[in-house]
Length: 226
Length: 310
Image 1 (tube, rainbow over the protein chains, first blue to last red):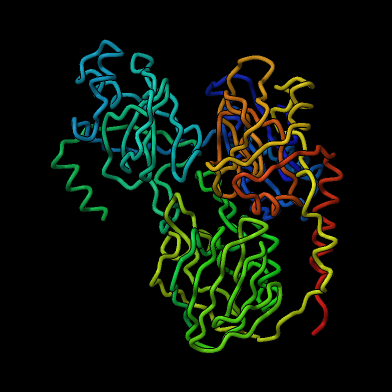
Image 2: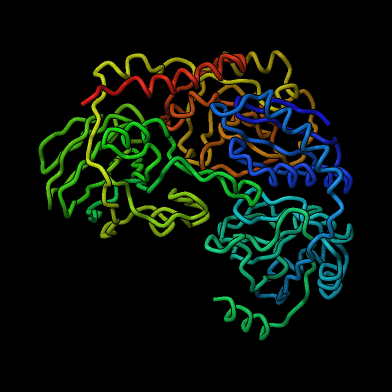
């Protein structure tokens, strides 16, 4: 573990050089241990693939003190790291209308569209962390056979709930944003609701499983959540 | 009381000092781009410094007040007229019922702040009144103000205003290079590349907003072509994407990203980033962590020291 000053108000705790489940667990253990302290001098925690950024109030606490807090949290974190993760089921309608890039993924991977859907919805994914935009989960564990590069030109608007593939990553757009991932389906669930507590459907450390649903079920679930 | 938006200006939003504690859910702090000006404006009208105020960008709003009130406009200089008569900035001004406050174009910065005694009354979302434009929540209905909007103001629990020393801004450093410390991936760049970054005069591009200020100038490249694994982005991080043109990530920034960060704006100069306009020139000066901390402490002392007992 290395602690690097990232700014006058933050420290970056780096646990490794490459993505692995061991490193992910170290990141999440420290994240949970620091969160459990409810220390309001620490303003924000940003988990990443191999690191945790700890943002603090430089008027309330020194960099050295935060370093000490991190060291001690690393110890408590490691001993409490074996909690069973939550498995979140995400229904996805993989119809052509919601998955305009299904055929591209099939062509690129040499699979049939049905195989793409079956593979995507049979894996268990790890929520490595949330970032980029509110409620956006970086999921690890997509089968290698599904890897497909992102679009050359991003779309100007991708509907909320869209499920996409970009390289070795898969994810769900929580809100309508521009985006360059290959879209293969859409979930009727709201992934981000600012009024809810917690505001996001998944949390770092959760497991995610996609289940294939038809259009009728999709519409029913949309109504159930609006 | 309420305020009716007659003209919204270019980009007017409700902001406070930001939303903290949700970065792990991908939620950026938002909040005033120039938090120092928002604090001064609030203190002038007798509010808590973190009360919700309006942030107006480049072109101010025209607002009608339905009741007697006290306001202050701080930040960038802009011509402000109350019922057609010019008013001063950086002072508490009484506004009578049915008056119209017209804020013009900013002339020496990007943003000005309107604080109203009592503070704007919008629902708190995740502990803050700030508008998250991209996430469409917070502030007034999660969006910028539009003509015809009616925004509520809380009843003030005290009506004592404050006055500021006339020379207050003379001692606040607002010109010269922006001070930075080394970024988390500073060692990805050669000493030469970092030196070039520090000697280049960059221009703020037109494609700049509250999420990031794109700079144009000498391209900087990393030592080798290795890829960064997506990691957390501190406020004010200066990242260098493949093209080599740096980007200052700001209040509405993405919480994580995949480009190496060469430097980071110091906390004490964050308010100056909020005042940069497209086509402005900007240079950077590297300071030590100790100097950065001393600068932010000095700024807090400045803020405590500028008000005169009324």
